[in-house]
Image (cartoon, rainbow, N blue to C red):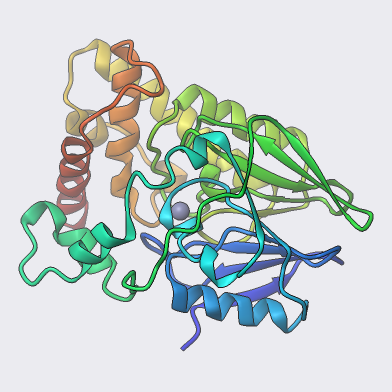
Length: 312
Ligand SMILES: [Zn+2]
């Protein structure tokens, strides 16, 4: 059964929205003008073929261009489906494109008896298939904002990183009031970031709020509007403020999480990712730069522990 829903937002812009939440179930978009522009492929080949089929029903020719909003596999591992397309991404996406490979993901996914630290991700990846993913990297690498003209439909690629990752691009179709966010926006699910900073993430959301879009397509979660952006920014501001205080009091990350009132965000999917955001703020309080390497194993162990506590 299809996990994707195609939604026409405006004359030229479509969103492909996942009906499933959770790790790797990401959204995509299509600007059906000029040679056709796809914003993000999906996590595996089968899913991306399904996506391409949905787009072909409204835009019959093979899309000429793909934008990858960032390097995480759930936004670019299906690139090979769009044979011959120009693939545009930021330099921060291109240089990290092979940091984590489909081969490694498939190894974890198919483990017979995964270690405790990999059990969650092993389960969450059960319905994907990375075995035939061939990494298909960007062919056009940009280092700043960039404008595309799709036969009169203007599309702005705006660099807002390093926020969720180093190479975060968002895609703005100004004349139609649509912004496609990649993972700079998780809507109705808790965000998680890798390299980047909390300050930059808040600034990125503010920058997009100022564009006053009518439709906002998040990387994960349902299509929303300006309020979805504001809600995500308020979450970061609240967590940042609380975590700074807890850091100054010498509390552990999990202690800090226990003291945060999730208020309006309590119904968000995967609320335990809060621990990763607190870890990031703690690193920033320690003076770490946005690209300082960190032990993801330690961060994810706290995320898992918070999950156990929240699920009781
Ligand atoms: Zn994602």
